[in-house]
View 1 (cartoon, rainbow, N blue to C red):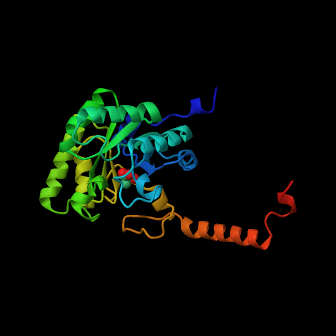
View 2 (cartoon, rainbow, N blue to C red; view 1 turned 90 degrees about the vertical axis):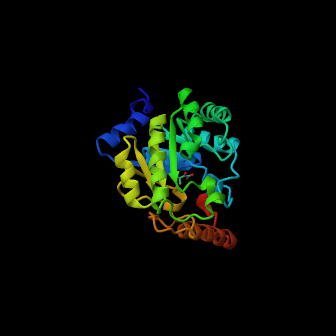
Length: 271
Ligand code: KIV
């Protein structure tokens, strides 16, 4: 029996069971093989191949420029690393909005070419037709409400969403619509904690929060942020579990100094 066959893989059903039995769901982003291998081995439930790759991997200011081909490249690298986690792949901006046929063919490309297990889409009632069409092909869909970075030019800012009653009510209706359409889970980004808790209590499917407080069914963070690789990003919701910026800087500077001084490689480090 191979080692892999003993591992119980996380599925969309596992996540629903976790919500039903009150076990919190853990999710982190991942974009490449090496990082995804560590995250999966650590025991994470879900790896999100987020379109935040556009920011943290490619250096763009927003998530808008990343392409379907680039998402497929990142997702296939992650899938090759993963033995246990459920892999969710973000559908990039422009690959699903406004045209449900195109949405379906984008989702099919992601599933076929990357081997990912599901897709994530930003938006509520306005994208329901695309979500339903993708679901008819048997592709699981995770929703994403609240701060939806693909609409940054509509919002104009990354501040907390749905603080006012009207937007909060709309978000609750959107969450109900996503559940009714058949989404297996929803990410809620940067909304008041009491609203996120209310949504998690209103719908039966798992709610995974980022900057949405502790009353939800699970949490997600961008892996580069929680590792402290980017020392310029410190929003209130982020807990940094390391300061890799400083540790990596130290390692790089020591290497430069060792090469320059002739200390590296020494006699034991050569043939
Ligand atoms: O792209 C991403 O990293 C995301 C998370 C912030 C949820 O969508």
